[in-house]
Length: 278
Image: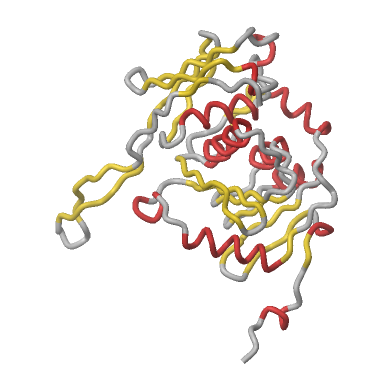
């Protein structure tokens, strides 16, 4: 990649210790995940305020711009400058963004923690997305992914109240991000992939949150054919996965899962083959 944006590295503490009383009136420490507003300015134009944990703000903003399709390529972005004192981030492009007023005029407020927003024109572009039909995922790899997430050190285990998203190549964990909303976590991974010029065709995406239409659209925009969740699926998420040809798994815990769409990509292993020999 010839041009990369200049980035700050402005992560902040992810948790805060506070004193609480338990059910027996005893004082003890507890931990809270951070939740901070971050207002995005694109070429000095106020765009949106994101509520975020603050662990990967630059990647979050890059992924937001990518998934909203407001900026076509990473080379167009000159810099991403996060300033927590003013709770803002200034994104500067090299030559401006065409039709910015028109492209940001219609917004859809999405479900989820912190409420996500999707610019309405994205819904019109879904049918242009083509996911790789020859990608395959076997049952052993799915189980390995679920187990890796179970063992992953996380803010959630210490403080709760956050969602996590992870990107895998096979059973290899490439990156793991937590935030107060699942849409932020997926945007942060999208931004990281964009910065690294990484294709999604051979990747698997895992989220702790439910699979809504927003999550499916963002995964499809990243070119990822597999989306896994330990939670459930909304009706529109299911319909959107069928529409874009995504393979969708939910209720992935332990050795359990439900495969909703894209069965042709999945290699099922008979139960007896998964039981170790005595």
